[in-house]
Length: 272
Ligand SMILES: [Zn+2]
Image 1 (tube, rainbow, N blue to C red):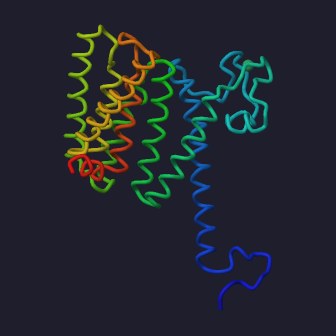
Image 2: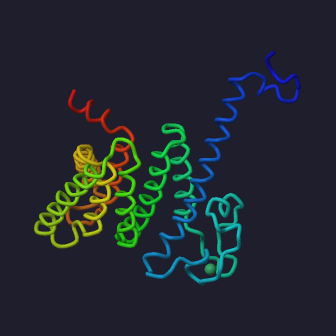
């Protein structure tokens, strides 16, 4: 017998329909977890660069604690009250963007990876990447307090994530570190100090560890290609000149994300 017989739950009548409905709910739950993690990442992105311990959500201008409905930027904006009740300073648009972004990433990871150990680690990597993107874009900082624990996590992950072994993680990390250390050295000699920083080099070490050898090579190639393409567009549109600072973290993270998700598929497409 098919269906439950209740007129009220017509859309859940048969097996496939019910499974689809549950799938939608689960992806929605993954999205919500991403939004909540995004809220934490937002707060860390604001607090960590000041070398302060993470605090309860507070207004960065007047220091007052935020009311609960502003703990998430998404709720603050959806309730049309994205301003500090004490001083009127706006809740930064970055907050809802990061929350929605991580929500979409978590939902996407669930759809592509399903419940797995890889999903768990990739979700953690996404949160780390989001935090690095925030501090790198806003303050040109990639903090040790983020990269050092990330590197430890990357090494631990090599024992659990299929396709990576501890020696491929170490070798991948060494290649990422060496390549971008030399790139930073040459870049600083050519363009003056600051073209690429120690934070980028440590991020490259982390990415090399989580992609592992040989995929780290693909991550490096993609980073260079994406960096070159974006820099070219910025130069052509005159948004930046040759001597302007362009944060390199986003290119490293884009290259890493593509490699982690489509690794060998991309390599085969390249070499075809
Ligand atoms: Zn305020």
